[in-house]
Image 1 (cartoon, rainbow, N blue to C red):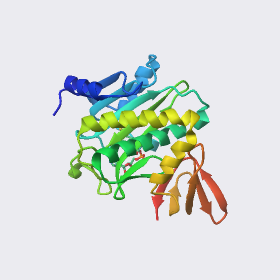
Image 2: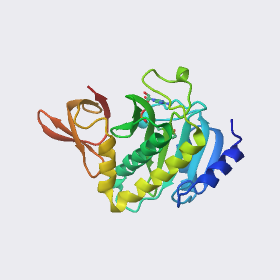
Image 3: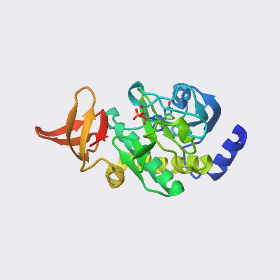
Length: 245
Ligand code: BT5
């Protein structure tokens, strides 16, 4: 178990990023690291400011869902101040998911795949997720990864990687920074990296959302939307939940 000071010191000494994790605010227990990062951003925190907690009491996923956040998991949020139109911000979530997957795979070993939009899967079980929450002037991207969470605390369809927190945090910050940088000038590289890890593309899927749809997941578009081949033609899905069939 790390003391917080020790944790922050060890991460800072190993970090090779330009802005991500600089500064890094560490906490023992918070409601949600996204809440703390949003408050910091409201007070003017710069791009890359990050918040890490050992535990969350009200960790959240998309659409008001809960993110199970006991000790042993990675709970990290980063302030982004994107210089591009807001309709392109969803691609930032995709970029961070790709970065998190690269980072987790480099440390854990086994292949990590991605389920649209932002789920990290290991052997078809969910090991992590990314939540992007946009405000007018900034966005907060939250990353949750089951680094070393006892399986008894997780849903049966979730898994934990069994890896150490500090190298994972450093790698996630580094890889996320790399992919977020590409969003503005080389978005096709982000899409290519996402496609090559995709557990969704080419498969029959069902989308649950405001309208339920089934079809073949054909591609993602430059804004991060899923393109679904349905009996009625190609549909563009901006939000929703994908079940692989
Ligand atoms: C996500 O939402 O996958 C995004 C999760 C983002 C969590 C991070 S932690 C740091 C930051 N602070 C926060 O408060 N949030 C972010 P979604 O696609 O809606 O998935 C939520 C669903 O995943 C739940 O309904 C459960 O089925 C499942 N789930 C919940 N906790 C899990 C866990 N620890 N591991 C794997 N699956 C989980």
